[in-house]
Image (cartoon, rainbow, N blue to C red; front, side, top):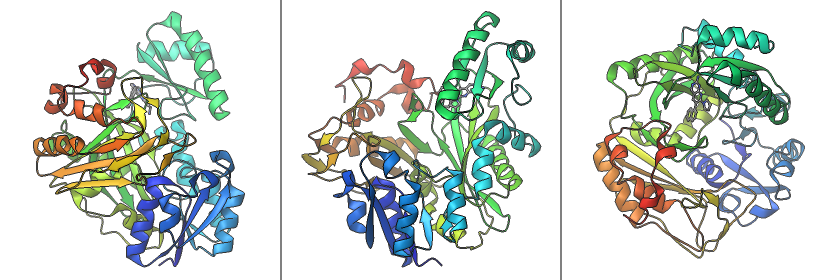
Length: 450
Ligand code: MV4
């Protein structure tokens, strides 16, 4: 087992990793920017190294400085958390070359799943259902016209280097195709330095449902059930839950089998997520694979009663998994509490938290790095806490979340708490009747109802 892990991240996920390391008897090293000197992850780690100024590009993304911190502290492994360097194949490679274990998959897995056409081709070979579309890259506009005609409008143009919605365009008719192809290519070139595009049939009003998997160094892969992630705004998830209220036992089994096939096809090592689009006819299609621990891993942890960070560390240290799949016996919901104004287009609201009282009591978990007196920096993402409720049924879980949101007090800054409270009274949400379009049509004017 590792003796000392450097956590190449900040905020709640850095704390989350430190906690598990403590329980496992592993020493921890925090890294921090000058803006984070007062952060809890710095205080709770055994050692801390400043890696640069506030801008992420100069600190949390500064590979030479982070590798220097690894060297001076003699850490034998690096946990990347999510975001920042978590899906950076070069960073994983440099760790490997330096003899420090990157807690995550091999660089080859990150690269393969990071290139969306390669990922899709890999899934086709593994027998995982994918959205009908072009066979690889679109060569030029004439090629695009031919393929789009075959696939049938509406179609989506997607960047092979993309993901999370960047470089993506919905096209309804042939006359709109050329302009959209040019615009998407320009956006992809500017964002990723790669303008390769592919075409897919547009799946109308889908749900976003993802399956958590784990694979060990010996080729064994299991799944740890699914998460419903359809409540999103501009590709930022706002709420996640497990299990998905939409899945039947049969569909759950088939999606689980597909996720395992996906993992086995690439001999995936570590914990990962296979994202699917699910249409109203219960057809499911591979969308993307995330090769990191995700923000919403907590809902899975709650429903299957399992520490996924511990699992990640054990797999990286070479331990075997049993290969048994997990099926939840509980329901869990996570509300992301962000320093944003939900009634003002989710405008970020950084600043000083003057008062902070988190919800408490039976079935409640709060993962956060903030406290009264903490200042939310404008440099990093605006998530300040994850409020997770667990109960035996979805109905009880929603009731518990209502109660928890009522007693969650944050003063000094504006947060998304009132939005979540309003959501808990929404009829369609309560029925489990929603798709990825839900937030677009959500009536924010009903404010103050709760
Ligand atoms: C799609 C789609 C419909 N049809 N692909 C959005 C992010 C990126 N990962 C893929 N996305 C989508 N791909 C086809 N062929 C609709 C979306 C999409 C979406 C997917 C999941 C969650 C929220 C979404 C919001 C808008 C569009």
